[in-house]
Image (cartoon, rainbow, N blue to C red):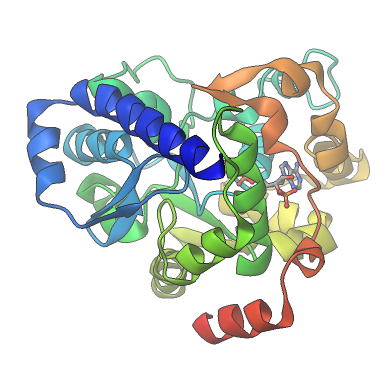
Length: 325
Ligand code: PAP
């Protein structure tokens, strides 16, 4: 029974992926033929493009992004490995950068009505998705964008301009557990869940979307060390520990330092609360909406804790991943 079930699902996966890949541009289809591939976490395959693993549609949008995006010096790019705090960082950066347009204390603040992924679009899932080019001229300043693409593969216009990049890094143990939960939540019910052991082996080999995670982190970390005015490197765990300090650092980096009056008036605490896991998880838009195709917002909010991996990984797995790190 089990074997029949998994064969059936594999062929359904394969069918869906073939349909999806059939919609890709001819150029992208030819590119895929030349790339190394491995079994994917959710799709049948992940392809290795410019040293990182990703799905076929992500390659198409990455190529388009690399070819067409013209960075402006005032742009802000928020970069992350998936499941390391993207939603949180987008919310915080949006609240800071738009605080002159939207009062933090207002009951109509956009973060109460929209998921952060709607307010800070991803290059690869929104702006350059499906072989389309979006008109970016009407975006409010400063333009905020999100991406999971490694530093080495960002368009040269971003690297050459003075635009800012903020990176958030999270403990790989927690990132792995968060990714594993997420993938199993978004898989169609008809598909068997991915066993933790299988996902873990792939993660340790670096085979995960936008991985290997160590290359991803090192790319942005080295850049933050060489050009600290261009790249700010934050850690999820530091933010959980002292959000006030980290928020001040982020605001200063983005060019919106809090004034003494704002600090006295409690603006920092208000932003922290507005963007907190507890607040965001309970908002209607995050309980029932969908921001990125097929991804329900509710799946972006699970526990939001540091150290949850301890409930899942065996001592052998902890040793194995520690060695990788
Ligand atoms: P994405 O890359 O798909 O956008 P991302 O937001 O990076 O996902 O990661 C989701 C994780 O961040 C979840 O972690 P968990 O599975 O360990 O719980 C999610 O709970 C957590 N998260 C989401 N929003 C917040 C927030 N406001 N504060 C802290 N953690 C958050």
